[in-house]
Length: 368
Image 1 (tube, one colour):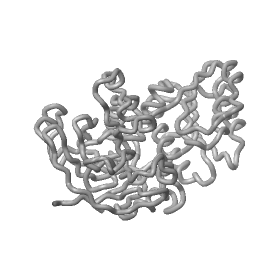
Image 2 (image 1 turned 135 degrees about the horizontal axis):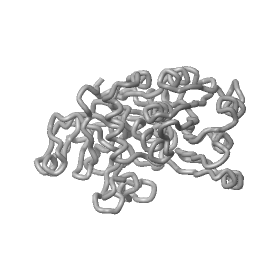
Image 3 (image 1 turned 135 degrees about the vertical axis):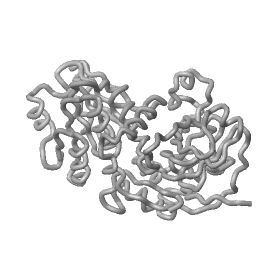
């Protein structure tokens, strides 16, 4: 029987290359030949501190060609063999209120935190047949309820690997934050999420974009400027609040997008103070630490709207793919490094700042 190679997380910061049987493709299923699996900060956290001891094929930002598709799969979903597609990591139930709204990220069928039977690419145990539930492999299994998007012509698989952070950029800045024409925005953190927010805010017509980072983010801050940031602030060298007050002439910003992903309470405090005097919006993402002295009084006095960012919607993915196809921005500046299947450990650690230097978005290419 033909075998499929996969890089499997078998413990904290431990990967093994394993073989799994090539699955039979049922009439309502398909098989994806992987081209690119993007690696982000979430992978860094899940690799270092796995939520369970189960073996997992990581990889939730997946681009590939449909290698084989059952007849019912093609009839139902409109995708056929040879199509280049982006696969969302949510495997929805297709029946609940959230699925009917296209908001698969909220479907209980994908919620690995509370549902032990949840299926989500890059999170689900490889012990669950047919095993291929992550992009760090040669092939990925697609059940009837996988959520797929066509990759537009002219967009390479490697560039399409940015669709997840770009879709998050659309969801968080436009849909959640309300960024639009003439908005003033503070983006905290110049990683792939923050840089994607920069592009989307610029596309939406923001008149002022400020991006903050630390001294170790020097190369990323330069990319932020190249992608449209009007100002960048190294918080290790400048007092950020004073600089923001200076830039905005005391008005503050309309929207704060916190993309620091667990950098503690300082970015939240800065965000609340940096917002305009009344009526600003702050969007926070990532697993936050406890905040026992949260400045709720300051927030209510300033009439701040606080929103939590959680993934992306179907529409956000479609808009992100259109953004990639537009070629308006030099997004190749974000896709900085390529790694092969045997280098998964190095790739994840490099995204986390402990391996190859100056990695922003890593493209895992399983066949390389």
